[in-house]
Length: 481
Ligand code: NAD
Image (spheres, rainbow, N blue to C red):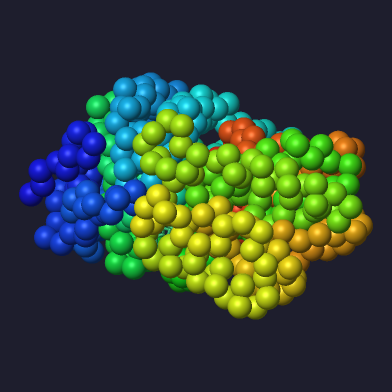
């Protein structure tokens, strides 16, 4: 049984699962809303236990043949997959703008090209996946990278297409078969991804999509002992739950989680450049895991920096993300809006001062003003916890030591930004405890580079060889001399 397509922005998209090369509906559905104006986009199939089981079985059946193809045999499929994503570029842009509120301009110029590259790049680089030979006194060690098996992929709503392909690319290229559970608040681009895989002729069962909620569908999926890997991006509480389920079956999992990254502006920083970059932290309404959300500014330049940043923030174009010129859109869900507002209220009640923003934005019911809070203590909730909205904090420091100590004083360690004279900024950045940190820049992401967090921001690394290491079983064939 399958359902009629939803029509979103004139684009037909299946609300059903994609299992073993076929669309499969469900007796249970969930309602999907547009965050821009709250209209109902349609009803999406909820993944029940039987759907999760069917998807895992299909992936298990497909695994031996897909693994045996080798990287060279898989590459033409994956190249076609990338091309089919490209053919759906406009539809993907519209769908993610409509269900997740992601900026159309960002989709068009960033996310969709990147989604294609995620598939193509890993298919290409799997060819060079080194089967190394180690020569020792006693033996020749033939070190092989074998595909692991069935991989569960779970992604969040703030970047569903980008993050799903970022995991699918290396998982499929290295010979695994996959079951993807997209985010329930933004499931549509992942459904179109299944259409692209189908049109590319990926064998049935190689790539499956089971829609549904985290509590029901996601929990069922990650608790299955037949999985070989779990690759998760999302929040810390969910990660703890998933790590528990994975641990019960000893399934290795990769966890990419939240952040509370420092944006350090040293005394010798180029203030205008640091201010222009600072305003970018409000893009996607601040719903970006790697944004620098805690501004730490040298006290000698703090007043000038605040005014320069305010100038850029005042110019931000807040509105409908489906319009090319918009720079800040809505929050994904009323629950998220409430959460963000409550964070600000508690901070202000605790003594924080609002430099700008601090309230809902009149553009729409799910809009919040770009906000900056100051007069904070290091242990304040808003300094320590991820808000995941357009709410940033600003604190000052008087020495490098103090800046580094403040930067390192949360439980998170995902990203970071450091502006200053290059040598100085590199030295300070080197002492920030984090997975990655940008010097005099923001957002440069290379597929070959390692990506991931430390402390509560995650376990494991993705990108280039790190993705392949995670998705492969490394085997040593020992040949005595
Ligand atoms: P979330 O943890 O609520 O949900 C993420 C995914 O997990 C969703 O698909 C959800 O359905 C699923 N899920 C929920 N409970 C589950 C369970 N018990 N078992 C299996 N799956 C379950 O996170 P979110 O609110 O969708 O996303 C926002 C969070 O993601 C933020 O903390 C953000 O920082 C983080 N994030 C991190 C990165 C990164 O690369 N480190 C990137 C984007 C977002």
